[in-house]
Image 1 (cartoon, rainbow, N blue to C red):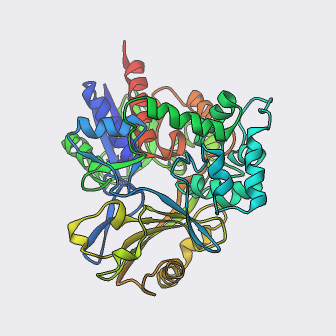
Image 2: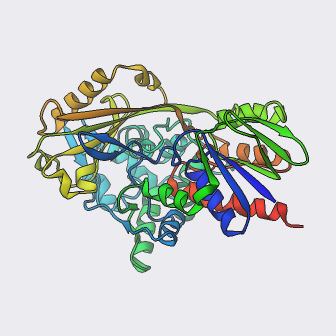
Image 3: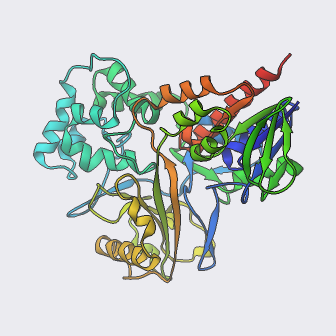
Length: 449
């Protein structure tokens, strides 16, 4: 039995890796360089992450895979996140889970909100639980429990930073289901945050929130590709699927691949193009899985600038307050002797409602980021080196009903066709690895006599 995996990003590589360990004959076809978005770029002689610089440490799947591959997993060297406000950067309370403090006293004292905003947020302790069932937007939960000011100015900037999404469109169950459980469990997000922290303190030492393999996130797909050895065919794009005794995957270069099973580990738009001639109804459903565009801006400042960064890992920005949605202090999170005393940061721009930034000139983007950073931090007006990485239509938008929609898509797929990846199963590296294992198990089950 042969299995063709279309797409050599993390989802495709991890799926193929699990299939290989189940003794399957698997081949991965990747149009570019294996690894997908988990890659680095050279900026002034430093290798820096082009996108995500780490992944969730409290979800076990990616951490376990790293250790299985012999990769050392490390935590950031600093901790603490700030919020951009009109009066400067304000630190989130140290006990705030998902930006929500577990101590009512912290809510009352926190300077990131007005007095009225703090009082309204404390109303979460008195409000009754939602009675209706079914998915809802993340924003609807936060606004109902904490109020508009706390949602827009404090919690939403932190929770939407990874996906650059719109809090009033994001599916709660597909993005932050813990918050729904908090309300159901404790009748309050504040009490839920408190109970979650208390549970962590009672159990084994909590895993760090953010981790990465030593050497950078790209070490994970690189290690998997090395394990797969000759099973990865780079430089060939899947352009068609044809029915035969099984499936024939037509490539833009080289001979077609005959396979019993095809796993589409590509963005939904590419999967849609491949499926349209053979399963038009599924292809149409895939068209409802929308995306947004993003830009990563990497800035390397001169020697002596690292002390300009406060203790912490970076900051997030309320919508419309600055060109970036968030800023990660890479030289603080992941210090390296080669950095010397340079401040090195990564800014995330774009997202829902701000996709036009992808088309802006590099110089304008870098200048805007540097100017706004210099307004809140004692950094020079311009970096020594900079790089702009564009991600057009690359970031999935998980809107209300996403999980149910993906389940219907998978139920409608023709026998022998599977889909996996960020478009369906979660944006974080850990979620992608988990889904890859689940899809590999489903493939093996289908092929069993």
